Image (cartoon, rainbow, N blue to C red; front, top):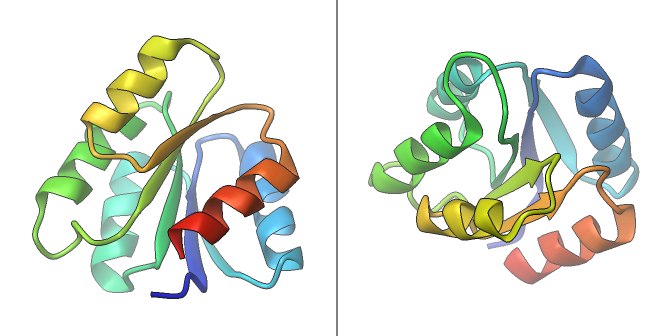
Length: 121
């Protein structure tokens, strides 16, 4: 499945803007969500090909939303990449345990993120 539509989920408007610009410049169609709850609503209404999600958010965390998406048969096939502000191996291990395909550290390195997305498409 080719990845064309990406949902960027981050409570930081600055981070959402940066990731949206990066992904749109690379040719992707991007939608934004500012919370885990908003992410779930948008995925239900218009499923993306990929979810790029912050870990630390008020309300539902990225870990919780990832688990919900990957355990639901209707959304289990949508790959999730988590973004963390910490470069700890525990975040990566937890992300993978929740069903994420990968975990990247902020600030996101553009070339690395695009290469990772290409491997999932």
